[in-house]
Amino acid sequence: MGMAKSPMEILLNRTFTPREQEEMLREDMEAELDAINLYSQQLSITAYDDVKKALEEIIYDEKTHFEIFRELLEKHGTDEEKARKAAKRELAKILKKNASSHDDQSEE
Image (cartoon, helix red, strand yellow):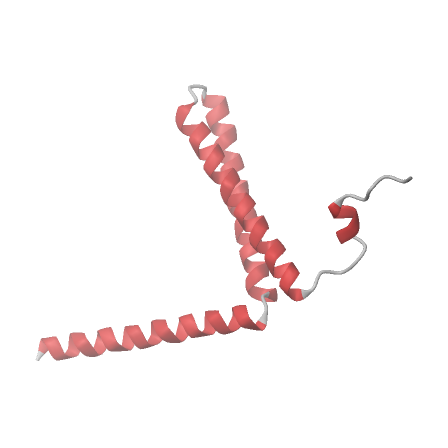
């Protein structure tokens, strides 16, 4: 009897669907945020300057990784994700227009 394959071995034998890829990028972003939070906590309690400096650099790197994943998700997100972002942009325009209109009326 052979050994069971690991989940990664099974997954690596095929290409992810767009929805699976989107989920993977979201999980990657979450992992970066977890790392940022952990290192930030460690930064707040360490007394050594060299450790603080190293943690600050690592936090910066993790934030960069988060941004890379966010940009990739924005670029490759599913149509549902793109539609949600488009709706959010439209809502922001409407709210801005309404706020501007309200400001004009209050000046009269």
